[in-house]
Amino acid sequence: MEIEVVTKPSFQAIGLAWEGTFEQAGAGEIREIMKTLQNTLHDIKQVVHPDVHLGISNHENPSSNRFKHYSVVEVEGNSEAPEGMVKIQIPTLRYVKTHHKRGDNIQETYTKIYNWIKENGYELDTTFLTHYEAYPMNESAYSHDPEFTIMIPVK
Image (spheres, rainbow, N blue to C red):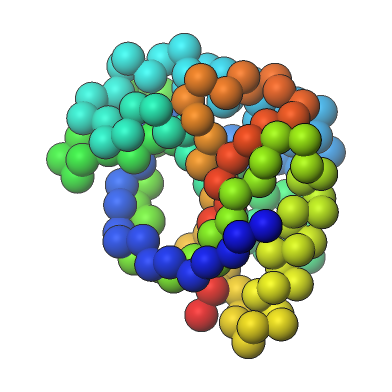
């Protein structure tokens, strides 16, 4: 597994917001908003990478079982969110990045990347988000064996 540290400039994204528990997410609620975004992508103007679907998560209160998730696409700065969607701004951040391959265990991939962060002297930077995942837009929202890129903000 290749792991690298990258800096991603500030960007804006438009899509759908969801808030709930880890149990609700595990039961498929996030998959539903992912599918909805795929089906309504044509409503979003000025998409920068129409082939990349971002899943951005923010666990605002680590002691809580709840978190917020955004199923979005990156857009040019002056794009307006269609009705029923949200527009979010992500600041320039440094990330630890890896690619989760189809066939690998997702929990093991996350365990390896978090261990790497600790072993290499980085700290998590959860000021704006906990992590994000970048999926190919054509990846099925219902896939139990997805392939995607993981980005975890660090300082």
